[in-house]
Length: 205
Image (cartoon, rainbow, N blue to C red; front, side):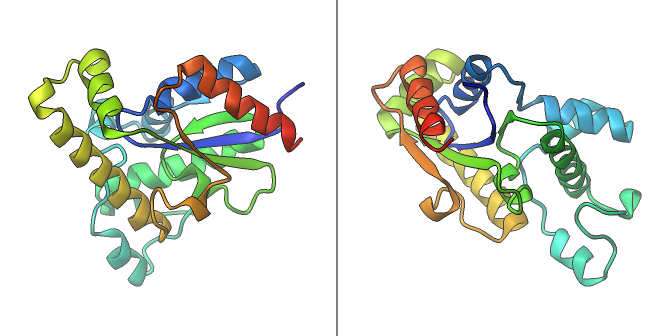
């Protein structure tokens, strides 16, 4: 069955959300966008991708101040050079995510995509999480993080993602009401997790 949805994936660090997104996209025969959004934003703005990479999914406290001054609005024109790079990246990705969605079904990982596309009716929002022991093990094995520091890195990254999501969306990262399906993939392989998601997508077609 051909995929009819745009799938967004929120994920805890170490849960394997990125890998799930890539595997799901391959299974569905659509594109997956994760770090690619940085490259697209850099191409559009002419800014070095590494600059954007350093602030990816990190919030800045300038946005509310900028909004209060009426400097820019989401999805429209903005005072590019006057904004911190965090805000510039968010606004560029906001625009790119909307354009990508207009092109048809795909998988988008992170970047507040569920919020950006909240007015569409063809979007399915997922949240991938896992128990801490699993995440520590994956962080050590997949990312080369020292076991003694793994939990600290996990907590810090989750906090950064939560701050980013909460700040730009006004919602609470990881809260079930923001998603159609939340999956604890502890004990599940990537393939099993993708199959569970695919079953859900087929059920709501």
